Length: 259
Image: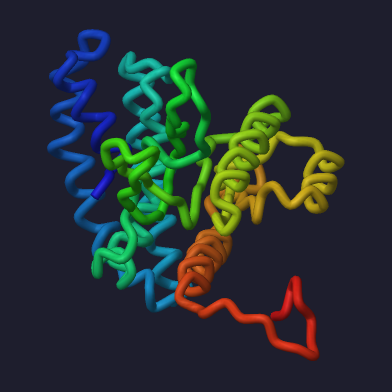
């Protein structure tokens, strides 16, 4: 299982990041492990709003402790806060039956985003890193050469502390790459708060590049919304459920959007 925030902490402890290795190790042992134990055992599959309220309360309290690290000299470039938000998705879905059964896995690196022909006329796989992905690892043989391993995405999520116009353009481009390579993939954005102009958001509703964008706070100082976190869970769960449905074309009826 991939725990983005924990991995970030451990890597920086081992590297004595900015001379703060001892401080970060103390934080990891005393704060992170306590936070992980509480938030990972919640029953998200119940879709009980009170469970998600408890989750956002735990996240809020933990983020306050992350902010305290900043006041103790840990730079914002550490990406501790952003990796906390990335890790939420792992907690939400690590116990989903399609994950625990091994049908799908949780990934964030080397996601399949296309192929290209190199200078020697060989086929190269184009990999892409994303913040959170639920997908399936498969093996393929190309040009009768060695077997290659691909991670085919079902769900890809870009996670941001906040989203501005520049980052929005990058997210749209990334999403388009993923969908061009895997047309059935669903792409999302999960962010704390939004800084993209309303006009750009409205335009994005018609380009079909992103399936949805979830904003957890009204603004930087507002509390996290348990309702939005629950909506996010339901959206991703539905995307996973739809992979179990058998595709069919029924006539008479609607053919492109039958549901």
